[in-house]
Length: 201
Image (cartoon, rainbow, N blue to C red; front, side, top):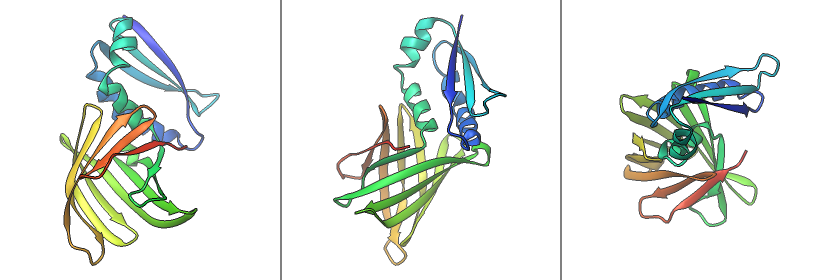
């Protein structure tokens, strides 16, 4: 057996969110081939510095198997913080920032759409685990509301539910897929072309 030791520097003030994300990601490591366990330790001298210890059966289980697996992409997605990409409206930018809530029990996704440097739209989602699924509630600055479920696996989040985009809008079915890609994730909503969101913090 071998032990991987990763030193991780976290932005000051985001330590609790990082610890919650690692706790949430533990099952991803545990289901990986050859993984015998993991432990996170925090530096006393530098509270924003962590060391992650992961025990593997062989070096190949870590360097080849895990790094090339969908589970590694899932892990990267959990510890990301802010991502930006094109909004459905030409010339606008959509920025999503994720944070853990209540010790990692839930995840908040706040997003803001800007055009020419001005905020034109904002929304927020709360994601919560319920058995094998994730449930979500979404609301926005136009009075819109959406609810639904998501399944997570193979480096993808697959959403389905209903949404009304404005306070007076009709309720519509919605589907979306978030696929983890190097440095961010790709969003596919209904039949719209894919949109790429890249790390922005």
